Length: 626
Ligand code: M6R
Image (tube, rainbow, N blue to C red; front, side, top):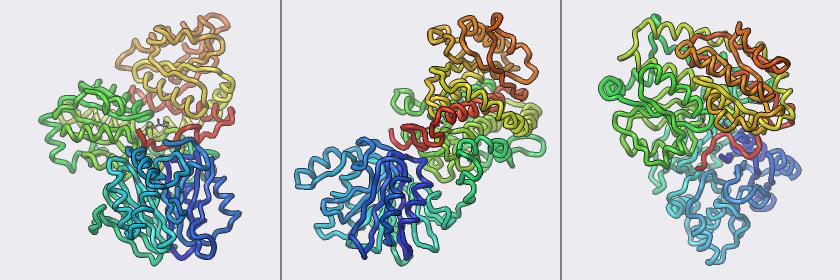
């Protein structure tokens, strides 16, 4: 949460900084700001505004700054309301040192009290501002900026941060430090960058250095840079070549990133499967094959499985958990934050499977520290290459490509399918015969065509979504694999269309939520045949009858050829829409085919309600605070 950009070079910094902020706006959009060093004018120009980057961009454009170094920030508010005053960058008392920061400083209140007592004047309610005043004190005492930042990192020990500092007294240098929040250096011909995500500078270079926790970067106007530890020793680092192209992080012809990402799902499925099965259909995962110790764990110790995730990743995890169960594993999927704060312990025989699009979700990373401390084995499913989650145990990449819309879509599909491959890869060692695995991988290869068929019906689903414009509340119900889909469908509708929506087991509706059903309530029911549990379909259908009997409005997601669902209900009270998806013969694959129309429904409902689809209110893409 929050996006940081820094630039230093021989060219005007403002354009690079604003462009970077626009690319990072998915990380937070409560306010934005820049601090620029322009020796021709004021020593340090700070321009910041509440609201989207566009407001700051317009103010910067009006000033036409020519400074060749600067720092910038787009904020998701943690400490202090979204306002001009609380927008970053924050400056010291003299306005000559400025700081941008992503993370949380746990001891900032004590520091603020102490600094105020020493005579410092604070302008904002943020935790970040203490950094500027600490730097001011160290600089006053004769430390150079690098030493001042190093000493500051000691004082704020315990917090999480990625920070960049600029000082009018040393205009040729920017200094950054990193602990628990991502930070990258961009090595471009046009100059050097610092950013929370390399997307901020991808238009200018494909060369990047990812800072590790405990590292600092000093980047200079003469195009040199150093990476050192917090105690000023040279620190090893790799220059990474970014593999994605610029068009992967741009909307192209689509109105929203979310729509683009929904449409990409057939390709995502192909990428997930690519190179992960042998000619005879057995699953092969690099994260297992190249880790003999993990193979030995699977064969000799593995007893049970714990899946951890948050939001969409948790629902994908619940789907994968059911597939583990089908293959005889003792398994549970838990909200990572709940696990982290519970007395629940993992055993040396537990395989932990953390799932995350970003790989930086703070709740999950704290949970993984608990897993690490317990010495448990983990296998991550993660989308963003090199993200913090990849530093725990082995794992596999989702290959979904950059996901920018705050509402997660293609990552859900990639997580469910990747999770299925993991289950088969583990089970084929001990519990499964080859034909079973081969039958699944053959069927999975047809999934991309099923999704293309679904996407071809998008206009019809959009009309259904638009019909939800004034709906006051929605329930999503499902059983078996439909349960996690119901929860995920409701999450999508809530976060982008802002229609209060509950996702639940169709069975549990009668234990309370059915009290909400009336002629204004829309109930979305996932009615799919699960070959392993045939009774689920009839049970769900009878729950739909209970809604129709109470005059609820019903939308059904069913399989092609299911003529029964349209006729449910008493005369004149039938479902108002039936969404038909291709049969995919495996419950876990049906979680993907049934979810995609619900993504489209939420998208269309949000658009017709005039919502900002990609940047929904109060949210940010990567949740890096607890
Ligand atoms: O990056 P992660 O997958 O770890 O993110 C987890 C959740 O924050 C995320 O899925 C969130 O719930 C999405 N906004 C849902 O669309």
